[in-house]
Amino acid sequence: MANNTNSANKPVDFKKKHSKEEMKQQVITFALMIMFTLVAFGLVLAEVTSFFVIPILIILAIVQVLFQLYYFMHMKNKGHSMVSVMMFGGISIGILTIITFTTIIWW
Amino acid sequence: MSHDDVLNPKEMPHEPEKATHEGQNKFLGFWFFLGGETVLFASLFGTYLALNESNAQDPTRSEMFGLELVFIMTMLLLTSSLTSVYAMYHMKNNDFKKMQTWLAITVFLGLGFLGFEIYEFTHYIHEYEFTFQSSAMGSAFYTLVGFHGGHVLFGLLWITSLMLRNAKRGLNLYNAPKFYVASLYWHFIDVVWVFIFTVVYLMGKVG
Image 1 (tube, one colour):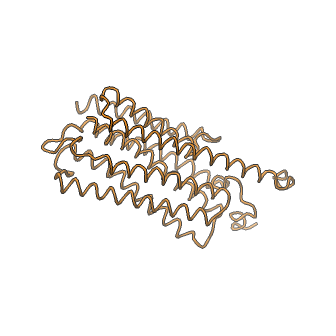
Image 2: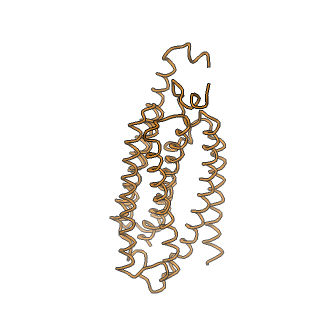
Image 3: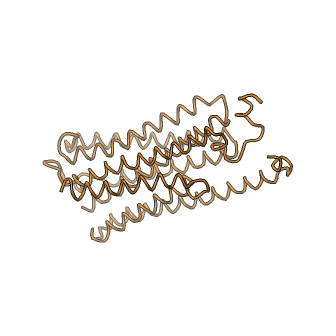
């Protein structure tokens, strides 16, 4: 606490710079997400065979969601280890659920 | 120092959403909720994937779905995700007015999304008589996509009421976690939509 008040404006400037840097990364993330979306729609419109397209579409979606989670929702920052435990816990149960529903229950 | 002084410090901390103990609890509790939401949506996705060919007398997915509308909806929601990032950026810089402006843009884009979704549903019902009851695929489709739409509606009401409630109060350590958590919810809605447009519409079109 004492350190913060003594060293004048420096920490504030540093923090502002830090969040500016982060904002820049987020804008780049956004541009990449738009690009992935365009590629996904483009592949479907180009009518590439479904054997190739479906895995690519799923990979594009996963990458886009990871961008969203790590950059937009800040999971890449410090203090998010418990958050990761909960999200990846949810995701793994979710994947199991989807596999079960599509292979066993209504087949 | 009274309680009010604690919540309205002279100099805002860098991460106002996590500066108080209550804020930290909200942050963690909300992520716990999002983990649960992931499971909820996964079960709806699983149901849809299992039943998407059980269309009975309804037209097939690739006959029905149009990509133009879905593309516009995707762009609206993706952009609204970025605008809420801007809102949080201004929150960290303690600029309440700019934060409110960006949140208002987010709400506006979300409303556009919701409008298109309602149009899409009424189009399916009137044009193809594809309803919740017409086939197993119909039930799965409307449950999954409708549940997401419900989340959008809830998010809009949530952000709007936060904006109105705190309009005169300004930003402090009491409401900063509330804004932050609402923006996390809004991002999560976009996360779900990415999978909906991929799994339901794009993969439905490919067949």
